[in-house]
Length: 267
Image (cartoon, rainbow, N blue to C red; front, top):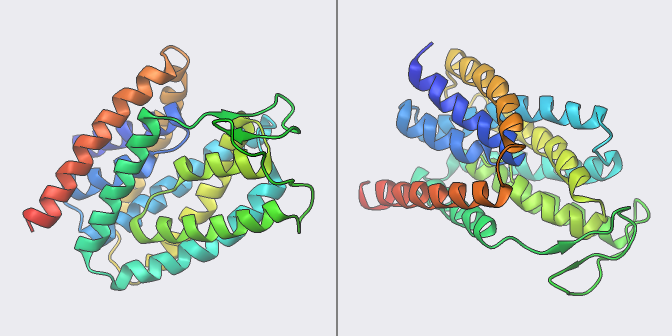
């Protein structure tokens, strides 16, 4: 196995283990710039890699009781529809547009890490929730409740973004789950992993047959990522999450800027 595949897979897995999301933000640039994979193929393969890794992480969270299955089903179902549509749109969209949107997503993720939202969640997950002292969240007590409708719309929107540029969208999903479904952060992260997995499979399916896939490379990358994600989980308990997020955010700013310069100015 190529040393670059090992390094890229290790970096992707550690980020997933540390933050529970962000793997595709590392995987796509690594495939594109380190491993010389064509842009659309890199986006598709990143979705496949994250799908498998997120599935394993989601199963672990489910076994630990850190998942709201009903919320995952609603958000995930509509997310899958949006992701497949986004992937089909990505197939026919000029690469430069996809890369610019991807860079903007990285800037957004970096901003969220440097200036995280203040989400107050009761320990039991049953009280009202507000962001920075804002209004309480909508009640989420049934399948046809207002918050479920909001989650469905949010699922479609995040799904389209996932399929279009190949990001799992965990950094967008977790805040939505906390605010709309009133679940504790730990359960929101576990639920988000299940949603990310489902959407990533749908996005990968949307690119299948339309772009070339290097199955051997993707398989090796995925295997390394899965192993490294467990190491990332162990590392997460030894360092300050705030410090890790700030460092990763700075890294994202550099990579996003490089992608913009390379795709727009460098052609």
